[in-house]
Image 1 (cartoon, rainbow, N blue to C red):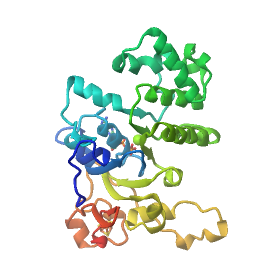
Image 2 (cartoon, rainbow, N blue to C red; image 1 turned 180 degrees about the vertical axis):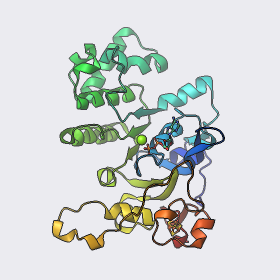
Image 3 (cartoon, protein in one colour; image 1 turned 120 degrees about the horizontal axis):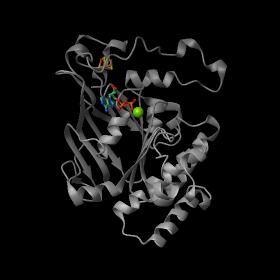
Amino acid sequence: MEEKMGKAPNSEYILEAVDLCKYFKAGRKQYVKAVDHVNIRMRHGETLGLVGESGCGKTTTGRTMIRLYEPTSGKILFEGQDISKLKGKELLHFKKNVQIIFQDPYASLDPRMTIGEIISEGMDVHMKLSEEEKEKRVNDLLRKVGLNTEYANRFAHELSGGQRQRIGIARALAVEPKFIVCDEPISALDVSIQAQVVNLLMKLQREMGLTYLFISHDLSMIQHISDRVGVMYLGSIVELAPEKTIYSASKHPYTQALISAIPVADPEADTEKDRIKLEGEVPSPLNPPSGCKFRTRCRYATERCAAEAPVLREVEPDHFVACHLCE
Ligand SMILES: Nc1ncnc2c1ncn2[C@@H]1O[C@H](COP(=O)(O)OP(=O)(O)O)[C@@H](O)[C@H]1O
Ligand code: SF4
Ligand SMILES: [Mg+2]
C-alpha cells in the first residue's frame, strides 16, 4: 500500500491492520489463506463496511484485528501502537478497548447464564466494580439497548432473536470499548427487526463515539450505514473507498459486478443488459488462482493477471484498488 504510515501514538487511526495474514492449517502442508496481506486503517468514529461473498475472510479479518485469532504475520496497531505481540496486562487493556458483536445471537449467549451475568462477565475481567455498581451498570446498559431491566434475571432462551442481539450489543458495550467488530449482526434476524437493530447500533455510535468494522455479505445492506466500504475477495481487499465512491464510481471489476447485482427499486430501469454477470464459482481457498485471485471470473483478465498479483494502490485520493487495469 502506498499510503503513508501513521507513526505517532494516538494517531489519525484508531486501529490498523498492516499486511495482516491469518492462515489456517488444512491438512498436511496445506493452508487456507483466510486473510492474505490485508491493509485496513480505521479512522476514529467511522463505520467501515467490509463486504464480500461467504468464505472470503471477513470474519477472520475482524477477529484477527482484535486478536481473537493470533495473526500469522503482519501487524495490528491500536492508536498508533503495535499491539500484535502484547501479552498479559497490556493485552488485557487492548481487549477492553475492542469488542465484537457476533453474527448468531442464538449461539453466542451462554444458555446457563442469566442475562445479567452475561452482560457483566466482561466487567468482572476489566473493571473493579462492587455488586451494587455492577447491577446499576447492567440496568443502565439494558435501558440503553431498549430493554426492560427485568431482563437481567432471565435466560437467553426466553428472548426473541432481536432481543438476544440487543443483549449481544449490551455485552459488547459493557466494558466501554472504542472499537467494535459488528460481524453480520442482523443477518440471522427477521427482516422486520433488522432495521431496528441497525438504528440502535447507529444511535449508540453517535452517543458513545464508537468506531465500527461492520461486516456483511450484502452490499446493499451496508450502503446506508458505512462511511467507507472495503470489498474482499478470497482473503484480500480488492477495493476500499468512501461509500459514495463504491456505489457510483467503483473501479474494480469484482465491485462493479456486486453493484450491478443489487436490485434497483424501479423495475423498468432494471434491465438484464445492464447487469454484469459473475461467471463461475469462487475458487477453492486451498488452491487460489495465481496472480490476481479474481482472474478466473474477470472478463478483463489478461496474461499479466495470471502472472502477477495486483497490489492495493491509492488510485485517487482515498480510493484504493487492486487491479492492473487501474495502474
Ligand atoms: N477456524 C478455522 N479453521 C479453518 N479454516 C477456517 C476457520 N475459520 C475460517 N476458515 C476458513 O477461512 C476462510 C474465510 O472464512 P471466514 O473468515 O469465516 O469468511 P466469511 O466471514 O467472509 O464468510 C474460509 O475458507 C473458511 O472455511
Ligand atoms: S487484475 Fe486482471 S483479473 Fe484482476 S480484476 Fe484486474 S483485470 Fe481482472
Ligand atoms: Mg463470516
